[in-house]
Length: 257
Image 1 (spheres, one colour):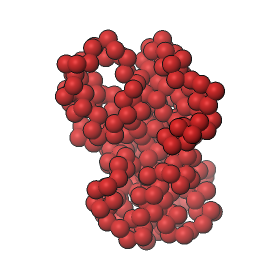
Image 2 (image 1 turned 45 degrees about the horizontal axis):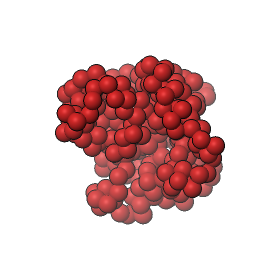
Image 3 (image 1 turned 90 degrees about the horizontal axis):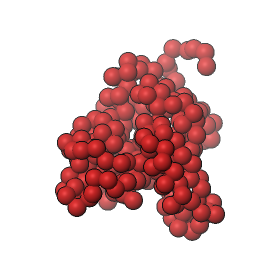
């Protein structure tokens, strides 16, 4: 099991690759995209920034706060691996009466769903921090699921994966859960704290992922179809003020759902 933050993972594997057998199955719980190379974490781990070789690799994702797992609160997640026997092995090793693991071979969908919901959860925290109410939050999260689906499927993930635990399930957890670091980050920004001060003491995967998400959107020609991602990334980068986000989002041309 590998549970380091996404941005630190490739360097860790590069440093320790000589003591990691090339046949061992690695299961990562990191949920993020790799900022340095603007790529999927799996690509960074297996590429020159990481192991630099082929390696059995799986990703475990879904709505799962660690503290509640340790409290044995019933939790359901999904593990994605290129080869189904690898996913099934992780499933059988980890499943219990309080921790249910589903399997998929859609590793792209699992990675993207787990990573891309993070900046959206930062946006949910910003709405909470502004005190805008449940109408605004429900509208944002609903439209955010559409953007999540659109970007993930454009990148090769499957729609059924994004509509499941790794995508919408994890988004619901991090958008509404008080234990979410991403949601809390958004709230703290709105309350006037500087982003660099927040990141000095807390890992917030949604911050670097927001930049990579916009890069992926541009690669897929979706830059005009991801307004929530754009607003969150703009606020985090300092190119959009929080008070400008409402005009940006609500002032867009009207259309059908």
